[in-house]
Amino acid sequence: MYQRIGVSADNISGDSWDQTERYMAWVSTAEEGIVWSLDDKGDVFVLKTGSISVDPFVPNNELGWTHAPDALLIQVDVGYNSQVAGVDEEGQVYWRTGITDGAFGGDGWTTIPDSPLMNHVTVCDTGIFWGSTPDHKVFMRSGVDDDTPMGTEWIEVISDLHNLRQVSCGRRGWLVGRDTSNRLLMRGEISADNDQGNFWTEVDSSLEVRYASIGIDGQIWAVSMDGTPMMRTDVNDEQPTGTGWVHVTNSESH
Image (cartoon, rainbow, N blue to C red; front, side):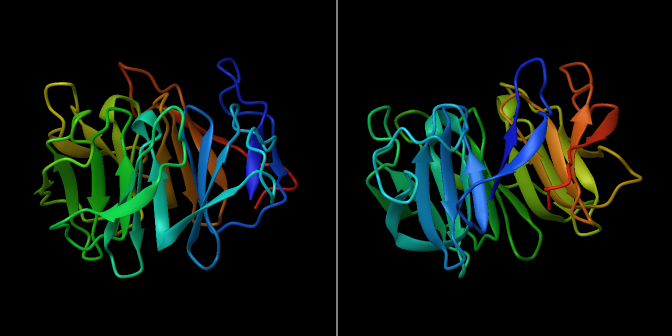
């Protein structure tokens, strides 16, 4: 597992990649410095860093990583107030219960009832979360609030033009995704009054990606088909899809 060194408000792409002492198959981080990871068996681990670093606050073995047992997952995502969702190999959606300021790792897992089978879920900084299915449909969880963080029902967000393999949600509910042609898309016109948005737009028609991600600052990241990590430049409220790319690499990155 690698962490990006030198990231700041004035240097959003950071300076270099640094390899940590853990080997993980999946990783997701939150604004509060909470890192959730999966090992190659699907076991779930959580680390509180405080600064997205490998210096642990938590006095524990294995560099401060704490095991969150009773679920074997293939993907996990952390978002609003460090809330965590994930999916298992069968496509069942899981939610981490009991997460508070004093209990960042929560106290257990529960499945979300009546969920379609998912291959990927993502939690926005608004608390709303989304998922994509193995047959490339996209769903948004409605009825989410502080009293009902798991929401009340799934709503399919239908598109006649794009079938999505994977989605990622970040700032103010902004959503990006990768379609079945490996194009990077962004959901248009998402707002406080329109959680679903109205359409998909291509971020860069010349690029194919193997993964897409958006952060709590609205910054768009992607991994190209050859494995190169990239960050979108000039992303702002007026131009949420940005204008260009920075290749975020060094001699030790993979």
